[in-house]
Amino acid sequence: MNTSEAPPQLRPGVRRELKRLFGDQLLTEPADCWAYGYDNSRLQTLPAAVCFAHEHRQVLELVRLCNREGLSLAARGKGTGTTGASVPPSGGIVLSLERLRERLVIEPRDRLAVVSAGFTNQELQQAAAAEGFFWPPDPTSAAVCTVGGNLAYNSAGPRAVKYGTPRENTLGLLAVTGAGQTLRTGVRTTKGVVGYDLTRLLIGSEGTLGIITEATLKLTPLPEAKRTLQAFYRDIRSAAEAVSAIMAQPITPCALEFMDGQAIEMVRNYSDLPLPGEARALLMIEVDGPAHAIDADTQRVRDAAHNEGCVGIELARSSAEVERLWLTRKALSPALRNVAPKKINEDVAVPVSRLPELIDGLRDLSARHDIPIVNFGHAGNGNIHVNLLLDPDDPGQMAAAEPCLAAVFSLVLALGGTLSGEHGIGRVKRKYVARELSAPALQLMHAIRRQFDPNGILNPDVALPDEPAA
Image (cartoon, helix red, strand yellow):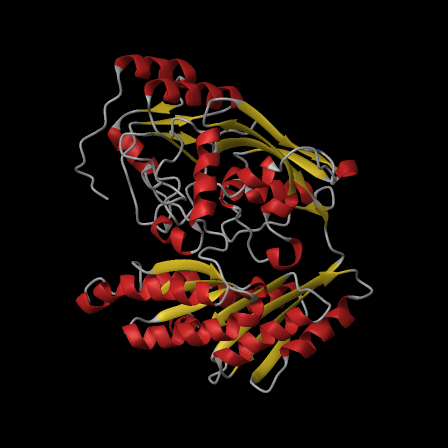
């Protein structure tokens, strides 16, 4: 971040057109715009203007204006992303969708919701719950992150292990392409095979193909009952093996979260929570389903979780106990921010059966590069958040950070994994993408991008590496 950066200038004619489109929902003063030039990454750029859209029409006209004027455009919700995908190119325009709240309609008979991009995940969940339903994606930031952002990143959260990601729970979209065209995708039914699946293509594209303004979402009935378990293990491998055993039996948990020994130690040091002294790994497990079967299903999962390395498993008996068990996991993020505010946080994913190898490999990389690595995340689908705890005052650690990160990615790919499970690529990981995707795949993706956004105005430095010169 460079707060001394010269303020970008817009032509007077562009300013007048933006004022016509957005009125007092427009920021152009640098002091006002700075707050919309960053997300939850460490990147920040000063935009030339920030526009707050209230309706689809404004998004459409803004995209057409940016095409005419050759201006780059970055869409954002509440800025909770961690990879810089909503950070604008220097001198570009930020389109904030947090005030685009035209519709939030729950249709119980069709088990769907129609929701504008600016509503938060929590607002959607509350409206759906009033009718006996929920939308499965539940990121940790659900109270503040927007539905539009969830779709742009394909952000999922703990429940994805059983219920899937936004791609599996979205029926259709309303969007504006980079070419300035209104696009409706998908269906309002759970079946539909007409044409190509543009809905799933747009979800997770990080605002590089189009800007999502509204979505038709598939809802799921609320379960009748839920049980919460907390299991401790003497070593990381025992916990990883327990995850594989849980996922190999017929009952799928609705949450299966993992914390390694470093993470547990941080919680010990920065909270007063009572944790077993011999614990070097933890699993948080939730099982949901019909009331008549919940106890038997929970016991099957508990049996799978119990192995020779298990120190103990506790079953919550009340809502207060559920809250107490989850406090261990919730205490971790504040502890990490306290210890290492400059940490590198990656969200890699590997096949569940390869988790033990991943955890062992990360421990070796930590020792080899002399960088503490803390691991936690959604173990049920192999999605682990790998945190490199860097000390910015340690030149050796800072020099080792990039080689260590590259080695982490090499390990993940060697295990048949992927560079990102739900955080996306954004700006911070795009240089590594070619290590996972083949040259023909990248060529095809660039061609698709040009078809949606021929002038390259939408997030030009996001998601894909630069296209090689012809």
